[in-house]
Amino acid sequence: MKVNWNYIKAFALLVLVVFLYSFSSARNKRRNLERIEVHFTNDENLYITETAVNKLLIQKHDSVQNLAKETLDLKVIENRLDTDEMIEDAEVYLTVNGRLEAVISQRRPIARVYGNESYYIDVNGKHMPLSTNYSARVPFIKSIEEEHIPEVYPLVMKIDKDEFLKEHITLIKRNQKGEYVLEMRLYDFEILFGEANSIENKIKNLKAFYKKALLDNQLGTYKWVNLKFENQVVCTKKG
Image (cartoon, rainbow, N blue to C red; front, top):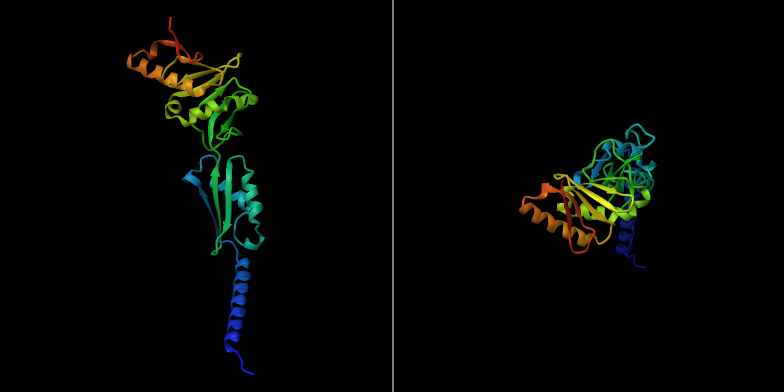
């Protein structure tokens, strides 16, 4: 019987590959972590510090020294990070050379509610606590209950996405009629926006008024600018 050495060589090579893979895998699992690296998307760690993220990553341990890779459950760690009130999303992975790396996307506030309880509204319209590390430069909202957040959220989003509004609008107030009043950074007149509807049309009218009044050097003469009426702006002058 003729021996097929090609089959024998192929089988031996397969056994060797499996052995080497198993050996390296087992050895890799026994390795301790060398360090932790935290990466923030957009290179911003405004609302949560790298130190705080590190503590969430290793939790019960004082450091990564002598912390074996096989003791880590990456899914559990990711879930722990995702439950932090300042984190929008987290991805955690181990590198072959013993690093635990985390990519952190922070929540982004678009307005700050001012009242008995102060907090942010984030870009998803959800309650976000204030940070001890950084104060966001966003419009303030006064005289509003948390139940009104879904109502004002479209207006706040419009302000956040519009460069003109983002630069000029500093305060949003809700009056007893359920109507919104806006205040500007550079001028002391108030903008009666009305209910949070027809937002695009009202903003279009506001910009047209502002451009005309700026050309006429009249912006400092107004007390009220009323956007409640369709296709027109009604102004009240001081005095």
